[in-house]
Image: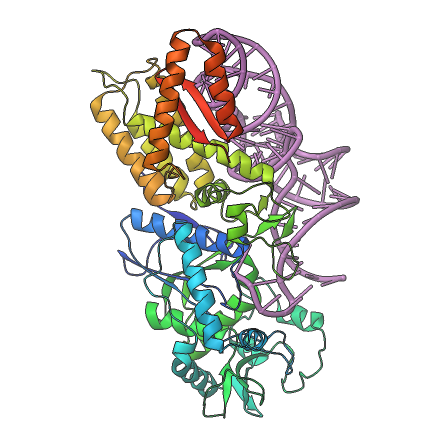
Length: 489
RNA sequence: GGUCUCGUGGCCGAGUGGCUAGGCAGUGGUCUGCAAAACCAUCCACAGCGGUUCGAAUCCGCUCGAGACCUCCA
C-alpha cells in the first residue's frame, strides 16, 4: 500500500514527497487569527483546511506538534506612521481594556473551532506572551546588519537582505518590480525604502498597547510574532508552515526574511497555502462586507441565507472542495452538500447492521487503497469523498441483498469509515435536535395510532395525522419497517 | 499598471494527453393506498479561435472573461 504523502509546496510550486526532518515527528505551524472581532466563515475555512492536514498527518502515524498562534498584539491599520492598532482601536470603541477584547474574541474563536470539530493545536502561543523573544530576534537581525533604527522604530532593510537572499522567493516577486509598483504614502519617510517593513514601532502617546524595549516604548511589527513563535516551538528549521493564500505576500515573505536574517537558515521546509472562500466569485472578507459569521450560517439569520445549516454540513461542504481551490459559497451549494452529507452518513450507518454472509462481493482493500491514494495526493478530500459515495452505494446494494459481505470485510470497512470519515475528515453524525425522550415517546404513540389506522386501511385518519404533523413541521417518513419522523428545518 | 491563478454540464466541484469523478437538481424506475422519504438507473461538459499530437477538456499561442496579491486580511 502506498502511504507516501505528497504535498504541494508553494516554495517550489510543485507537489513534493513529504519527508519530515525528524521522523516520526512533524512540526506544523499555522498562522492563526487576529482576535479583534468575530472570525468569519472565510477565516474558518483555512483553519478547517489545516485541521484536515493535522488529522491526516496524525492518522499516518506522525507525532505532530501543531502550533497555531493568536495574534493579540494588534496590527497597524495601514503602513503609515499614523496607523492605528486594530485591537486598541476596537478597545477604545468598546470602552474596554485591549486584553478584554482579546479574551472575548479568543474564547469565541475557540468555541467556533470546537463547533466545527477541529482538533485544538498543541501549542497556541500569543504575540503578547512573546514580546521578549521578539525583541531578542530584532537584536539578532540588527547584529546581522539587516535592520536599522529610526526614532525609536526598527525597520527591516529589504534591499540589503536581497543582496544575500532573494526577497520574494515564496511569492515569486522581484524586488525591482516591487519597488516600481510601490505607492508613495505619507508618513513613510522614516523608512529607507518603501519595501522595508517594521520590526518594532514606537508607540504614539495615544497607543495603549505598548511595551518597554531597548528603543523605548513601542510594540512589535506585524510579521515578527510568527517568525519567533514558530521557531521557538518547532526549531529553527521545521517541516510545515500553513496559512491562507492572502498571507503569502507580504506576511510569509517577511517571515522568511526575518528568520534567515536572524538564524541564517530557511526555517520552513514545506509552505502550504489554503485558498479563499468566495461569495459570487469574490473573496469573502470583512472589508468587502460580504462575510458571513459562523453563527449566522448556523441560524440562517443573514440576508444572504435562505436558512441555517449545521456546522457538520458546513465542514462537509468545505471538505468537498480541495483546500488549494477557491470555494464558492451559495445557498444552493450548501443545500446540495447537506443532502449529500445526510445520504452518505445514513449509508455508512447501515454498514453496521448489514447481515453477514459466507462470501463477500466487496473488496475492502480496494477501498482502502483508493482512500489513501486520494489523501496522499496533497490531501485530496473531494476525491476521498467521491470514493466514500461509491462505498455508500455498495453498502446500500448489500442492504438490499444484491451484494454479499462477510464478517471480515465488514469489520475492515467499519474500521476504514472510522479512520477516514471520523478521524481524518473530522465528520460526525448530526445529533437529532429536539428529540427529547418526551418528544420521542409522544411521536411513538402518534405513529402507532397512525400505523393501526393504516392497517385498517383507514386512510383518512392516517393522512390527517400526517397532514397535521406536517403543519407542525414534522415530516413522517414511511419505510419498510414502519414510519420514522424528523423535524423539518 | 505589475505579478500570479483560474475559466468544466442547471448549481457546487474533482481530474489532467487516450479509460464513469462525485454531490445536488432533472429524467426514468423500484417501493407505497396516495404522497413524501429511501433506493436503483440515467441525460447534460470541459470559455472561444488556432497550433503540437495517431489522439487534447488536459500541452503551446492568441482572444475574451473572472479572481487573488501588490494596503490589514484566513
